[in-house]
Length: 496
Image (tube, rainbow, N blue to C red; front, side, top):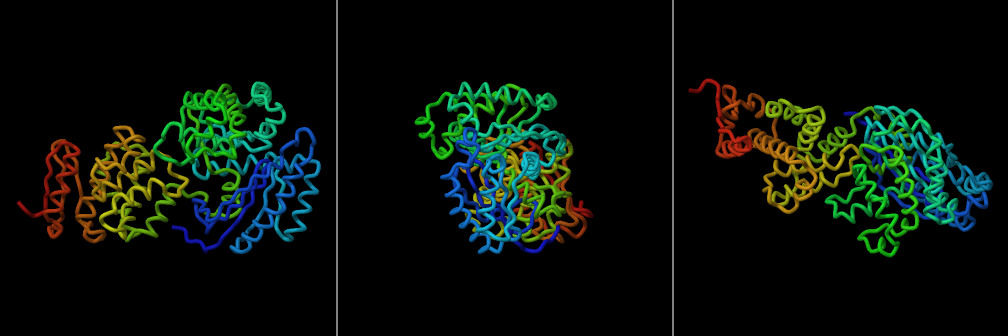
């Protein structure tokens, strides 16, 4: 495990629609925001017609930035940096605005990003949670749409289009049909999009996140987490059609509707619909991580960027909440015989489950299973998609003796295939057995091993390890064997 000194860092994303301050805690592979505040300024409103930043937005920006400056300094954030994007970049009074900010905040770096830099940060943010991403990143803001081609985790082509939701609304004079034609014409100019046809589409930006929130609520999806919420191409098309054709008042009645974004979502849906038509993606993945997380990974956490994000967050939770940082590696070897044909992604999930297998050790025993399940299902960790959360959470609930009929397990029942549900059950049962055998100590687990054969499930004990035998061990071995519809046996070396 890489140990790094404690520190805080902060970044302001000064966009065409809103400004947001995020303060990150420490240096880790998974960005940990401890402060996150947004203000809607709409600096880019009217920019297409006037060429200038919205005057009302400029006045509000000065007040908000004074507050953000005080918060970042009060929290001892270093580095603290301001990143301005499309509206400030394109406005004729952008330099004047930046000079005014520098006067109010002397010594604070203020960078006006080029379209290429903005795209690069956004792509890095997506790769933070999906290091092997392969497809197209589409990051929508108020003033621009950044498109970035990724191939096996590498950034290739990139471009910026004037299709941010505020600018598109202005260009189309509020007419969705005109907006569709404008989006088609702009997207058609990007020839290299032919290279990502049929691959995943990764969506970044507040207006796209608003679409995801509406879809999650509309469909009663079992996990209210936007990050790595995934739709099929057909599912995304259905969503965009619904948003475009649903009156605003009806959208307002959707539970948890992002009211401040409802003016923008039809234009975000138009842009997404045109991208879907052009790309025919295999899947559509919503990513919360974008420009700000990209800044964090490049400016603050570059030293840990090569780590596996899923394993990194699991190891961190193991260190904070478990009793041993070394037992999980032993558990990986101990549980392996029951999963001889696992794929690389399945093995990665088993490793995460072993690392997290003792994080409920300090919880109240009456609530340990449910508490651990919900902790994993809802954890802050960029490397876990929704199915991974559901798999590991179910595994650990079973490890802590949850009955499968419990209502709190419903998200796993809905998100996992029957095969993955059964695999999580088996892994939970074998981890339960392992902890019963050893009590969480490596010494007692050493000299024991499990074996799966065509005829039985056998717990082997080396000579002198009979001390671990007991009624509870036998009972949990039997329950594990039941999952395979096989008999169970305990075999101790040197006994008849």
